[in-house]
Structure formats: structure tokens, C-alpha cells
Length: 124
Image 1 (tube, rainbow, N blue to C red):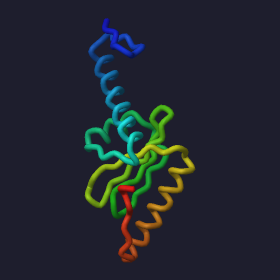
Image 2: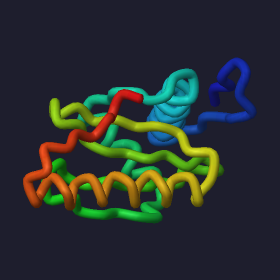
Image 3: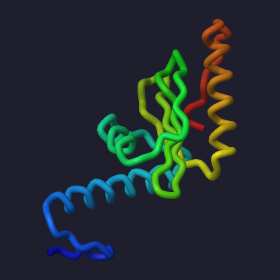
Image 4: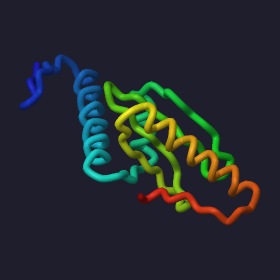
């Protein structure tokens, strides 16, 4: 049995240890996104986030993959894909804030589909 420092967790098996280490990685990903307006993550980290989250909203943009609102514990994470094919996550303060951003994004994508020449500001 292993006790990790700074954690109230006893590890009894290799499977428990793997689960704990994945959980700690997710926590690190979320903390990184909290420090900035957004965080760019690799595909493997997105897969872990999706595996350990509840998908509250998932909308197809038809231009830039899907935009999702994820819930991990008490955290709300908005995930989208930029025009540079970068996977971007950002923490949201509330579902209302996330709903508004998703609505704005979908309106811009609809205008882009119609050929407006608009751009999504992913890095704000």
C-alpha cells in the first residue's frame, strides 16, 4: 500500500495507481487552463478529459470540429478546436457564461458558412 504525499489516497493496486495518476494529470490540465485565458492541449489529453467528464453540451460547428462544455468535478471546461487545428480548453465561471460563448461561436460559424469572412478569436 502506498500513500502519496499531499494526498488522502491509499494505493492498493497498480490499477488504483494508474487511475490516481490519470486523475492527477487531469487536475494539472485544469489548473493550467485556470492560470491563463485558455490552454492548448494534445489529443491524448483531450481523450482523458472526455473519458473523465460529463459532456453537458456538444455542438457540431461544421467548420471547426465540435465545441463542448465538459463538467469535471465542479469545474466547467469549454473545449473547441481552432482554425490552426489546436485543441483549446478554457475554464468557465458558470454555465450561463459557457452558454453565451457557445452561442457566440455558433453564430460566427453560421456567418462563416455563408461566406462573411469572419474570424473566431480563439486566443482571447
